[in-house]
Length: 166
Image (cartoon, one colour):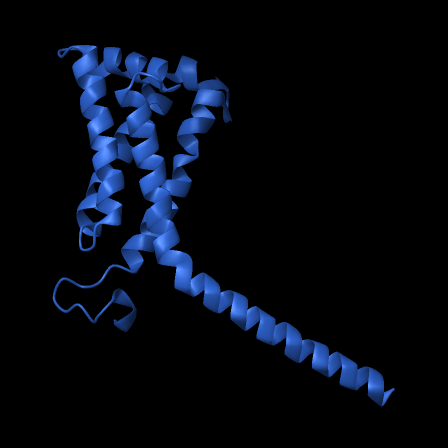
């Protein structure tokens, strides 16, 4: 019976050491991975809009017609594409996170508009989004990741302080 307890105790120690190793690895890569992920999504989706290959183009055009149709659609689409690319790049640049976060807030507000303005396109029933609606709703994951980046952003007053010290 004591050998079973010893084996169990040793297994617990091994599991704990492995767990600590994995958690340490995640802590080391969390911010670079978060920033790179935001860059990839924003840069890629913006680039697709820029070259006219975005699968979201019909949704963007429909929203454009409901909101800012005072400018030509190619201009609007190009500005939106450049805006998304810029957000992505800003997440890679040191000390530019705050600007990127501010721009994401504006982008997310605009990106959510079809859920309210284009209900025929984004909803198939009560709480039942279409594929386009799901595409928009998944942006909550981007918001969550931006919150993680924001929580680790250094204080502008002192580079050695983060919000964790408060």
